[in-house]
Image (cartoon, rainbow, N blue to C red; front, side, top):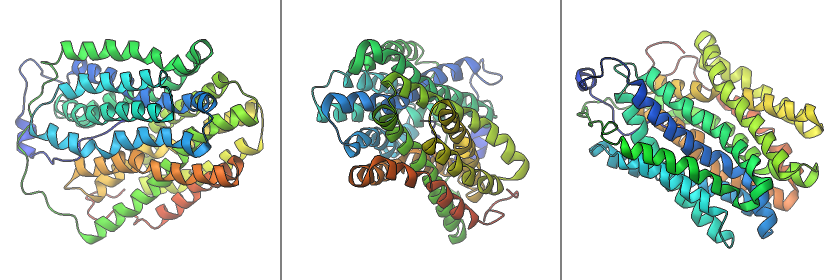
Length: 410
């Protein structure tokens, strides 16, 4: 998933004085290489949910066991990012780029060959470690290649991840009818190809680590309270997103008679609409403010999900896609809000909102609603999941109109 290096607040002078001979402006080719790696990395994450019905059928898994395959992927790819970030902060680490892409794709690719549930989990965890290695270094390098325009450079970098997260389910869905559980093998092709490209261009992507600032101000208690509320609200969005990715394919196959490929296409619609919603939501928030945008959009997700659950046929899938669009409209917005709350620690704020809020908070939700699905039925779990955005909106309503510590009103 997209990530920003949270462990260093770059010294302003070091950041502005850093130059690379021959790069007068944004290094679009270099960022394009990083975006290609980001595409493969996030495609590997996006494909996991589409493979769940296949793994469930092959090994007679419970909903909890199936949900924890996705949970293992998310936990491995987020929880260990701080370690890789600390290492990348000390020296340029281009091996995290090509090696991360290779491990991410190979781990997913060989999961389809696993002989049992524990084998699948081991492969998925290996893939997650590659994903964790890639994100901090790639985001750091993208920032340094942006020629003083980090928002623009990181935006292009994130486009690769958003596109990959939507394309991964599509690629898996197209391959499942031909290969079954071995559909994961198709991810070896782009993974090895892009990893080889990054390895060949490793010198270009070896960007020096600038001097760190030692005087970054510490956030006050009000700022910490505000960002804690924002993280809690964002976590409700994350629980909704990933619990739907885990349970909806199973429901479509088992309860509505969809083929595994058809369920995969439904996930493509949900994830693809979410990627578009991320871009649209940023424009809305720029005009009306992040808090107001959260309060407007989060409550709209619930009726759309209820329409999906109560309906059937194409209209229900349209409602699912619309829910994805509205749900993910606040993705980049919550990152910007976090930065407003911690203006002296912009990278730390981005790391908290992306690494924890948008990814790392998912496994507890997956475990909880997977257990509910096993105990009370999948429908009960999904109807409860549909209410999570309302809780997220209630938490957002407690946020201050103007973030503590912000220099500009949100």
